[in-house]
Length: 309
Image 1 (spheres, rainbow, N blue to C red):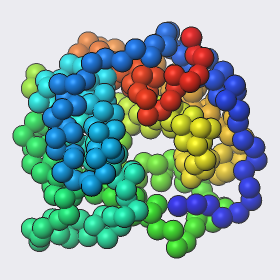
Image 2 (cartoon, rainbow, N blue to C red; image 1 turned 90 degrees about the horizontal axis):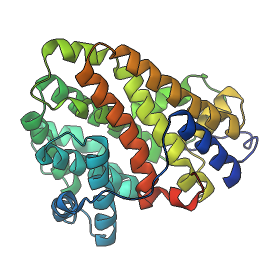
Image 3 (cartoon, rainbow, N blue to C red; image 1 turned 60 degrees about the vertical axis):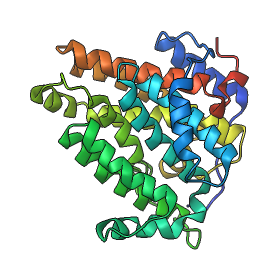
Image 4 (cartoon, rainbow, N blue to C red; image 1 turned 135 degrees about the horizontal axis):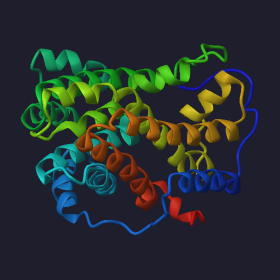
């Protein structure tokens, strides 16, 4: 949903964005690589399912590739069975991202139809199926959070797709973060960390203490590393970065630099939270670095067009 009001203070060049990215990667000791991990074993299974929920078969193939890469980069330690569930979830949301404006009624009515056991359209039949898969591969606490997050994200999407009204130009400085966090689809990726049977009840509680940081760093990495595709290579302005710049009165460049700094800061904080638990610390660090590698290697985000090395 767009903001009404004054125009953006400024835009940002490819060169400036490139410099922000290079600084962040250097600080995190990440050497950029665009070489992609093989993902055919997951891709083939995802595309077989996603091709049944959209008439756009090119889209089905495209989102299935991205979804397969998410599963193997974010969660390299998970079994293929768990990675497949994560990949299907990701592909579903990517289809919504591309075709959601044609599904507003289905999005609005999903919860009611689910409670009444009514038949849904094909994409939402798959989403209902994923709820049963969550119960099969994740602990009950995680499955509950995933269910709640899906409903929250559909609410956010329904608001975003309503083009009949606009947000006003004046709002809480916290609005951009609040509206971003309404999209529970990103929260799910944090809870996907906890599929392993060897994780104890004590570790679940320890994990919860880091969830706010893991959730925010997931959003921040996405907001920073998808910005090139969306707002430099594309013309999207209805994004967290633009909302944040408007609501806090900073430039787009400053908003992006703040994002990069927050990513570095949160990574260190997460490491401190898990400093006494090798399992959780290693999972969290693989998750964070895996996200960065995913965005660098995925064709969808076009970061290979930049000179980041």
